[in-house]
Length: 298
Image 1 (tube, helix red, strand yellow):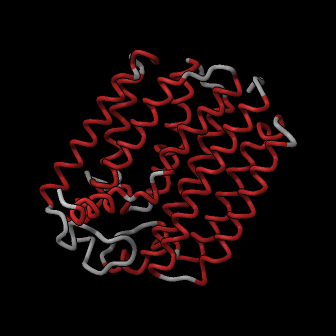
Image 2 (spheres, one colour; image 1 turned 180 degrees about the vertical axis):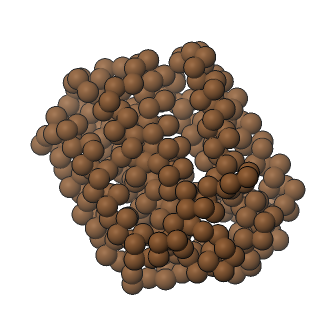
């Protein structure tokens, strides 16, 4: 594969959004450090699983949106390799299922740490990765994309990564999963905020199309505030060090929010990347603070 062809595949992976899948695993590791249950091997397996599952979902989204006529050449946002003719539809479909299969194989290794309860959960995750873009009721086309992100990029990675390390599911971990999911939903909000006009033309009913840009911009702000609020009791346990992280997060969050109405089209893509990286900063900051402050009850 030549360098140019490789660049098309890298673009299809949507590297700007991959911190979303990494962040949930990192947050769970921070929670495990805080409770004294951190284990490196299952954590790394969860990280590989999360990244592979997200790439599979990104590939599926590109293929099925092309197949169903929802992508057109010259759309806003990242270049669509299949639509623009850079990648064949068959190659993209093959890559989708190979990547999803890789994620499933990694997930099976986690059974050794978390037990057979992970098998049905893994099947649901695999189906969810595809249900976002295809099936009888594609979630991304009916205003449910953000809900899917909260579940599969927040609650699932945080709770399951914590579980395979500790075999426990305390309430604080579930609240943290929701918080991470809300931050991940903000990445999708900016994506759909940018693409709202193109999506409306092809009847792709994202939340931005259904509610309008002003409403989802307000939702973006609320998601960040609620996310920090849900985890505030944990941050307080690590003050004063821990409290610096949510303060920096909220300041940057408000800054991105204030810029959104002044940008259109491709100019919004850097804000998507910034939101993704800010989410990872928040989760990594929690993990660092937890490792420094020592073991505490969740």
